[in-house]
Length: 168
Picture 1 (cartoon, rainbow, N blue to C red):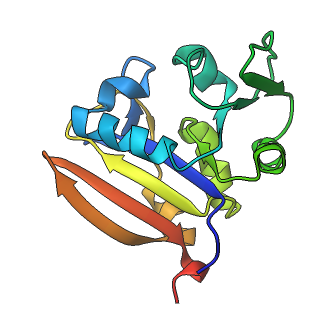
Picture 2 (picture 1 turned 30 degrees about the horizontal axis):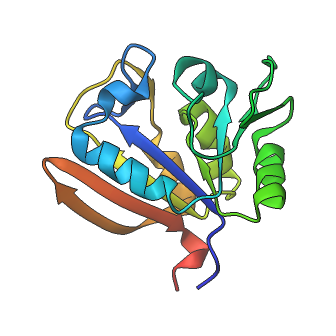
């Protein structure tokens, strides 16, 4: 098995939405928050999109945060901002941290990385809560990735997806 260096984590509502009132955290039940912190512990750096960085709380992130954005923001002690394509920012975070890195951006940020096969493992939480925006394209996911595992905890389904070529 190849060493997984690029991980991604996201929550999806019961209706396929990835946000509620422009925030993914509102879709996240307690079981997902526990898993979220477990996945972060596997990483040496975080990679997020500019929108996620501006809308969610990264000022107290326990790891360096690499932000791919078209609108740079003054850097904080643990954040690095790049006006570059997401895959370039992922590569920079990998080079600086020696990986693995965790992508926590929204669907607009993660979808192109899934399409290009940049992500080695996608941790997907299927929440029982419905959202109202940024809907996930499952057809795109099935084109390049396959489900490796799925389990249910407290009415929340946790899935792990890997590139199709990785599972032989």
